[in-house]
Amino acid sequence: MNKQALAGVLEPVVSALNLEIDRLEVRKAGKRQLVQVFLDGDGEDGHGPSLDDIAEATRAISRALDESDVAGNAPYTLEVSTRGVNRALTEPKHFRRNTGRLVEVSMPQGAVTGRILSAGDELLLDVDGKEQALAWPDVAKAYVQVEFRE
View 1 (cartoon, rainbow, N blue to C red):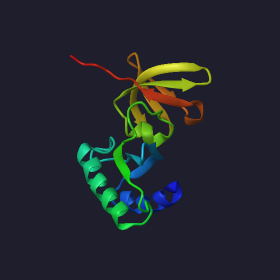
View 2 (tube, rainbow, N blue to C red):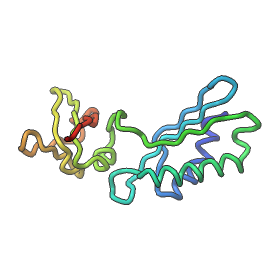
View 3 (tube, rainbow, N blue to C red):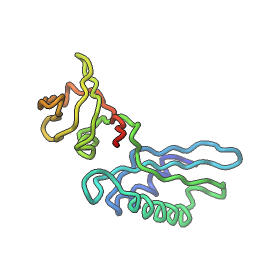
């Protein structure tokens, strides 16, 4: 399955749902191909797509694949999910969609861990109760820190 042709079929479908394709992967899985579509977007609350958004997108993507000839006659398995918490935050929109979450930010001068307060002209973190502003050029990447609450 041609990844570019697949993206050409799926991008308008996903865009119509106010989502975006974060990553698209196609690989062999036995006699089938595994088509993985990772989605992102602002969602209703501005914090990424909900499970309902992903379910609706899965139905729309499945329909689009059935109606196109991009898969040919080859059998495939479709998986649709969010970009996931373990993916690096690399763009301001990723940070904005994770406002309120604890992140570890890598910078040339080292790493800092804090809670995202805002992501506008700069990244604003709460680091141990103090606001710390980071310029976007100084932010290499960041990862959401999984928190367990009682």
